[in-house]
Image (cartoon, rainbow, N blue to C red; front, side):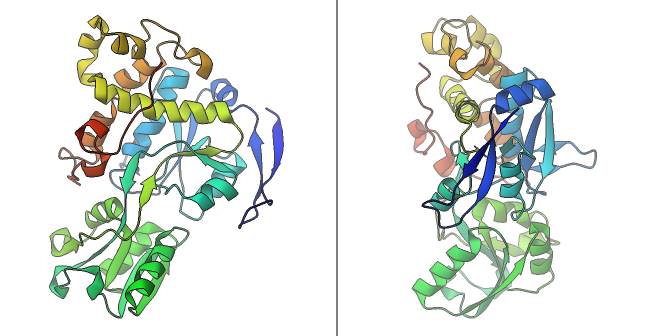
Length: 337
């Protein structure tokens, strides 16, 4: 496909020159598989087993996109990326979508040649430390050494927090997340700071996970979501409505475990999302039953959350803010009309 030159220097704090693929949907269909950028290994979000099979909520979003576009959730090539590499990989066309526990911020959305396509997980930055330190609040971390991952919003959030608290601290930085965890486990720093969900995941990698605690405070808002290249609006719509499909599926109680009942349902909303009536896929360039393919092959948001992050997973994270709006959470699918 042709590329369109894009200059993002105007009005940008960070000047980035990149190019936009004219039609990612056509590229993916012609290629026959989706190129998905994921983390280098974050349990619950994106991690690979010994056989090279990828798992996690970010991975499942890519599987859902492949199901919607290609009709087969397995048609995905995963590219593990460091925090430093992730945006360049998306900008350059190395990947079609970035689904890698990435915070949706103004700076990234407006000046890096990328567009966020929703929020898959509402998070906040926190701290993890050894129980023996007896610390119960982040305000007690005076002169603490803190291990963090380079190329993230973590460093800025730490600086803002300790500056507001008038507390001295020391940063110990690493490019790869596994290096951060290893350094912390080896005692090279007192504290590790990251998104709270990431801290729960990182704790499973420690020699003695039960000896470490994640403090309750969140010092920032970290809405994590997928990103696409700026300018390819139809592809952005497809990624966005794939996520909305998973949320709407949960609200309608349509998923992998209820597909038989959904196929027999006479409820208009269920019939629309199943592709039995209406033309919801037409303006996206997708098949009428694209949503059914997502929900039958990958599942709705509740099913995906439960197996990767919830009580059925090693992380056992409560839904909290990541519940549906009707259950006290923040997740809300736009109307399927």
